[in-house]
Image (cartoon, rainbow, N blue to C red; front, side, top):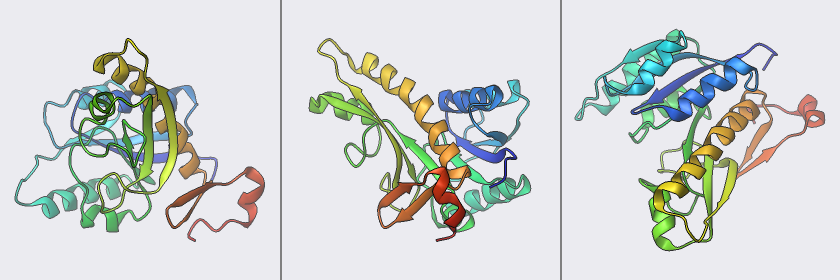
Length: 215
């Protein structure tokens, strides 16, 4: 990709704290990107307000329980209207289906509040806390048809302290999520990732001249 900022489309369902971190990092220049549109399946998602406060276009597409393909088709239409380079799930509480995956192959990212493949699905922080692990964290990965099983781009470890509660642990994981997501977005937009099976190789600047991002 050129030095021009990459265009992001962000899907949300809730308060949008990761969205806010992305918006802040775009504004500060830490992230070479701009959020072009934010789409929510919930009309009252506070993340929509965050986007509007930053001057970003927003769309509410009501979730259609028995028409997932139709919802995704509408979302794809909006994302393509804004020519987004990358789709970022930021607290989007739906499992992505074939329609979105085929429209943006290898261009959909998600962040999960645990060190995958441990504790996939809902409430990853609580799962880790209840299991009694000593280290947990967060994972940014490519989205695939299997829930939380896509190739890993970035992970950040968080130590579980003896006096932690589920809430204090979740708060510290969230701090690392805000760092990890923008780091992963920068890597993907700059074509510094190469997928080989389940492994994601991070390319150095010297490797880029010989790298075909379509491989």
